[in-house]
Image (tube, rainbow, N blue to C red; front, side, top):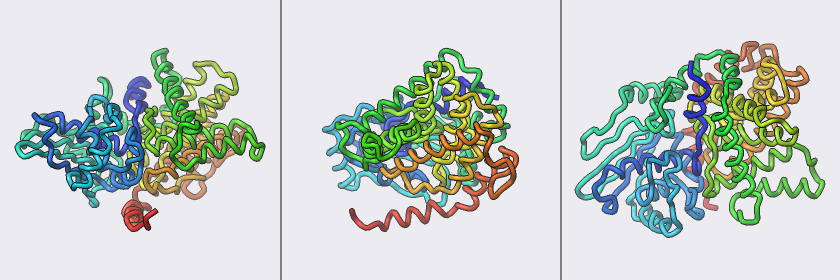
Amino acid sequence: MFTIKEFLRSEVKPALGCTEPGAVALAVARACEELQDRSAIDSITVKVSDSIYKNGMAVGIPGAYGAKGNAVAAALAALCGKSSFGLEALKDCRPELVPLAEAMVSKGQVRIMRCADLEGLLIDATVQSKIEEACCVIIGGHTNIVKVEYCGKVLFESDNVHRNASATAATNNSAATDNTAAAGASPDAIYQQMIGSYFMDILSLADKIDEEDIVHLLSGVTMNRKMADYGVSDAFTGGIGFGKKLKDLIARGIVADDVINQAKYLCYAAADARMAGAAYPIMSSAGSGNHGIVAILPVAIAAEQAGKSTRAMAVALATSHVVTGFVKSKLGRLSPVCGCTVAAGSGAAAGLVRLFGGTNTQIELAVKTVLSSLAGMVCDGAKGSCSLKVGNAAGEAFMASYFALEGLGISTSQGIIDACIEKTTDNVGVLNREGMGMVDKVLIGIMEQRSPA
């Protein structure tokens, strides 16, 4: 069994912008770093699975002043990306680079190609000049580089790259060795162990955090709160504005000024700003920044308002992250189901129950309530309206935790909910993989035929 430290190192880390274009940028940046003359690039071709294609179609790129999409992310990565920054590969993006990147896209130098027959997470980036080319392949996890080539010569290849590619295509439920991660248990090992673990064993990890882990967990609160505060500030002029509006409704007395609505408006705001391309990092959870917003902010706001100790907040946050990871492992890294609501909503509910002294049985009740309520919510790509799902997941997490703390929840088998929590999460995974297998393709078809704004 992996340790809590190994889990946090692998699954809870900063990300700049939406993780799908961020992963595209990472792959392109890594390939570019093998070129002798990066400035001579003629073409960039990025093959992606449907989930990467869908989530990168309309989302803002951090620091790109309104520019959106995987193609711009790939172009910017060629101009300024650094793979050493991981999902923050575009951290050095400057305003003057944006028109250059957009020009590369408009000239046809950047191609994003769908691999419609492959599920899960795949990015295969090739950069070419007249005299050289390099490629980088990511499979199974957003930072999971499994192969690097230069002019046809393999410079690096993961021992299990072929196994992971086929497993991803077959089950949408695999992850490979994350070669950007720190030493210790690999994300592949963590992910696969998570799938087969007992829920109570996962919960027990949260109690084993040390001071280093506490610092890491609380840094996520600071990071995500900064994005939320920016999202409700006058300085933020993009996005849809659900966070700003809910905060205004609270101030005007139209809706209650309570911890649920405060957490909701902060979650709305953080996701809104992030999806618009705000150049602030987010502490992610289970490979997603929006998951990180849901997993962290509701628990942190509740802890602050209740005057809980630093350690109590950190244990609750650790609980939220491990439960998010547990549910996410059943869905797959990327899926037709909205993981922000289903996985991170479950995690937040669990963290809130732990924060207020609830039992493991009550945590289980809360998770089942969230899954019963939200399990079928689809992911229709990363974009501004994700903020609605993120904020609403926070609200559902609070209600599920309050019900559970009163001993109320679904304890018998109903619908997809089973009396056993492990079977319940397995059922959600089956619904996602088998019952919703065509959802991504249908959604992409709808998105590609949208009327212009």
